[in-house]
Image 1 (cartoon, rainbow, N blue to C red):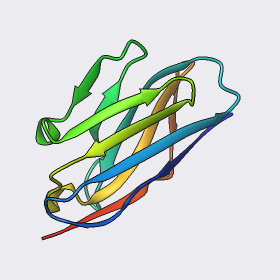
Image 2 (cartoon, rainbow, N blue to C red):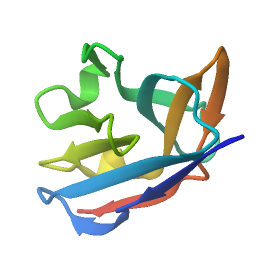
Image 3 (cartoon, helix red, strand yellow):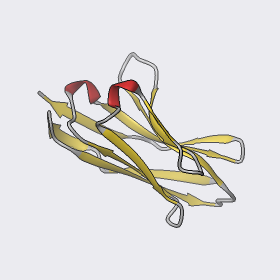
Length: 115
């Protein structure tokens, strides 16, 4: 099995920055795309950003120009640099991995942006 462990969440003031990290471990055969999703209570989980094995990226419109996703294939890791954070970015951020046709999710890390 593959596990994902996220880190880097926390409390920050509006306009501040945070960097999320996610590391995959376990029986990794071939990593597929990796990404970050977020969820607030009462709403569906939404895509924030994702990156393919070839490095192509995709972002939610609400974070374009503020967030940047990157990955380290050697470390089986994906990162999310979040700049100019807004209160609307407050959510639990979940790491996602597509591995051999299955979806793997991390437990999530809380990001809270105060106004």
